[in-house]
Image 1 (cartoon, rainbow, N blue to C red):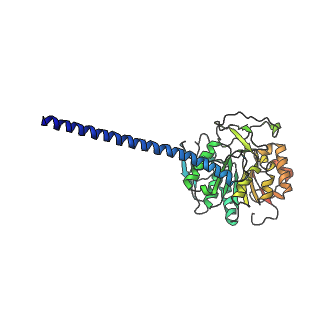
Image 2: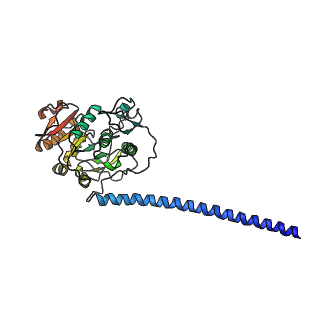
Image 3: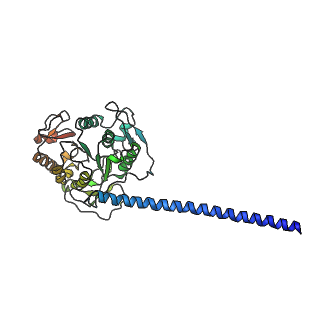
Length: 344
């Protein structure tokens, strides 16, 4: 009888311990699930609050302007490298496309002794060092060669690019370099009209070389496409250049250098950006001329715009270019405000 009683007590004790154990496991599992749920909710709330903060911070910012989130995690895997140093000690991070898809820009970095457009980048940096009050607007940022080096110098950069695979890589480079406080990325195509969905051309060897796909004789006459899939990186939403002005004003930017390299769409920047040029002091613009010179109507817009604003067209050696000979201009030109010293 005593034996049975002792046996029953042991069984009851074991059952009790088992129940307690199950309860503890359930409790810990519940708390973990609750923590993860709260973390997800907090993350979503943070993103929403961040967007609301941006809208509040950039007063009168157009709803068509898409500011690229610099805090988002990167799910896509790609190669990121540390560049060589230029100007004695300036280096940064660059994240690359595959060379077979981007033989020019990313291809330049697979040789660790080279940098894409190193001479031009160095020139921009030297001008910024000489003029510490100037910041930078990078139109056609691509994977961010200019943006990343200027940010490494400590200046603010407004970088604009419409191609999501470029911006994802640029975002990761910004994260690796810890310069998110001095860069704003805008994911839009600059155009004469805002809020339209347009298609980019495709270049299988130069993934960063896409331009807005318009027929030659309809550069500013087009039909909007409003029902395009947002998952296709070759379908982009347009803004005017003036729509980025609230970002610059909110960041206290009143003087800046500019680079424009958007595969033949350079005229759309000036055609839609009078307020930016009227508000900011932009003494120096580096512009790709190789493609846009093929479009007579776009060339006329550019020449008229800069002529009225007292800019001279120059070579990289500061030689004046004749507007009447614009078809013979080099692939890359510079616009310099007249009576501006120490830029040449």
